[in-house]
Image 1: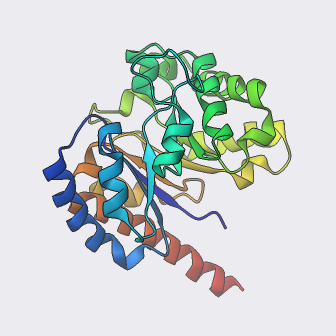
Image 2 (image 1 turned 60 degrees about the vertical axis):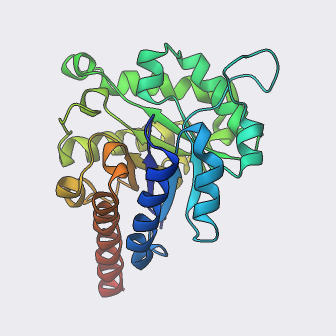
Image 3 (image 1 turned 120 degrees about the vertical axis):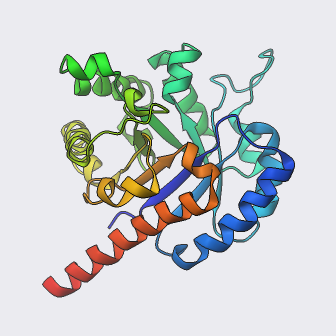
Length: 265
């Protein structure tokens, strides 16, 4: 069974004072289901040291929001994957829709960043997803397959082993709109089928999480499908109660699944 994961993407938010207050409250509220649901926090680069120290030995992982496509050198303003690894990061977001749209990261850019994260022995969280126009034109899977293929062509299927895929429909990020549970489950299933067609077993083994305006009020419905292995949480991860309630919804889904399996067994 794939262990679910909840990833907090703080984006460009936070301060030394607010980070500490948020994490002190959040860590206490996450404690009841920390063994059931894996949790990772991705703060802005300047706060990696602070968040790493606050997480301590809680079992919650540190993540970063991006990594350079270059290993080192004359790349002012960039942060290399090896620097992030040295900082204690376990996960790195790659190809987030805001990076693709606002900073024009191409599929090839994303593949190069993915490769750097892999080479530094960290786990990439590869973000894929379509715009509203692409969905309305029936291009959802064509877009996602193109985004996945760029990485596969660069690093091979073996390079995907153990990574996480985050499906984040661009039209549902920061807009207040959310894909329906049926749309999410259908797309996750299609991603698994694509990966399975690339290599037997790949679709079943990889964790695929959903990111797109997940909130405490819709988390239970979005996580209902066994195709959904957790969430990539943006705005709601800046509120301890909201984030922990999302985690509780995911933990409840796991408990219900295990109970059903025990009954069938």
